[in-house]
Image (cartoon, rainbow, N blue to C red):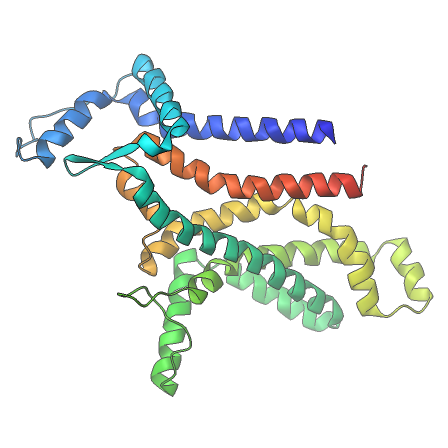
Length: 310
């Protein structure tokens, strides 16, 4: 248990260090002080023609180290953290607390939905006869080949088509004024992770079904549903948990697209809008996205380690 906790702590520290190093990269390859000074002059109207300005790529190691130090200082005292926008500096916390919870709810909702629905689909799949399984596999493969943006837009268009046909708007399709889309974004962002979970469990459970203890249980007269849930699913669950990192990246890669298409002003659009001019802001937001996932992953790892010391 102590060894596992040590590995998790190392993973946390290295991940945070990676985020800090990555988000500060612009300062390493540009003269960022000059770039930001020119940006402020343009934003405040003191400079209206920047065609004569050049900013070639150069190696700024000292500035990079100073930026890393500054970012750590900002993280240590978030109440005093500010970010630059359009000629002025603003406090981070009021804006951050508006965008973060909404994006986190979509992210965690998508994670939970993909696991629950994916596990349910996999169990149902194993009950079907062989020829129906082949059809289901082909459908999953066909959907996985579709681009993420296409799937999101297709879901929206389906809801619009249903509304025009029946006059019934089952879900809000976009954030407008005081009307917020909630269920549909979670459903949309969970589609590809659900397919990944389903496919992984299908392959794992099919492999498990060929093992000798399953054949022995069948010979004892156990029903298929009992074999699937009590034995196959139980034995494949730990390996599925190991795939949560991949599920996390699938969700994260679709979060910005989701926020743009559904007109949701969340943390990814916040980073896209202000992160380039404020590397410390990008670092803080990325760490805030990573921490909930790490807590889930660490808790699950310790729990599995406790239940199965092997």
